[in-house]
Image (cartoon, rainbow over all chains, first blue to last red; front, side):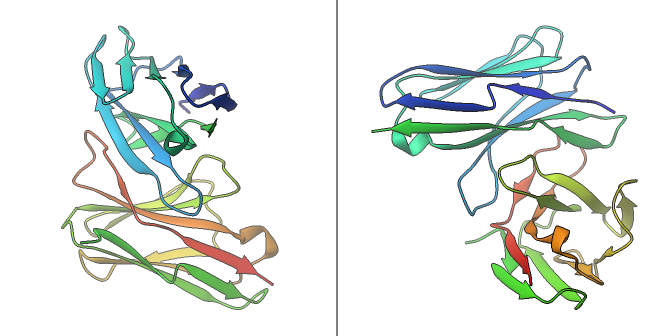
Length: 111
Length: 113
């Protein structure tokens, strides 16, 4: 069973601060997705990373895939209250035929 | 222009009374998934269909069944809901099994009384 560990589990910060969320595994993934989920809604896909060392930017969000494709990070610059939500990473392995979700990071950004 | 639709958004059922949750998609994706999610935890995969091929997770209770009559629709049947089955149920789709980008519906919140 492939496991994905996310840290921190909970994060509460003030508007304008920067933060980084980590997603780590001992397994190699063919691709990795990041999702954001707001209370009472389904997860929304933010990004997919495929290549080791890949960096993708989505406005104030920067996603990085580890060189060995075992880990990933999400960095948010100047967080805003609208960034509040549950951030989930999901690692995919072609052989497994499905994705493994991390336990999520609950982010609260206070105005 | 909703792409993955789940009905109802909220469902209340009685202990032991069968309940069906529905999901439809306008994306024409091959794969449809059902997840169970409890209080801000990670979604837990119950099963998925690749076209008509059904794939059950090893730890999914027999109490949970699924049907996919056509590409657009997929149903989750809970034959005898217990109190522990109260959760958010998420339907998701993907174009194939790689690169595993999944598109989720808004979920159905199930309450068991």
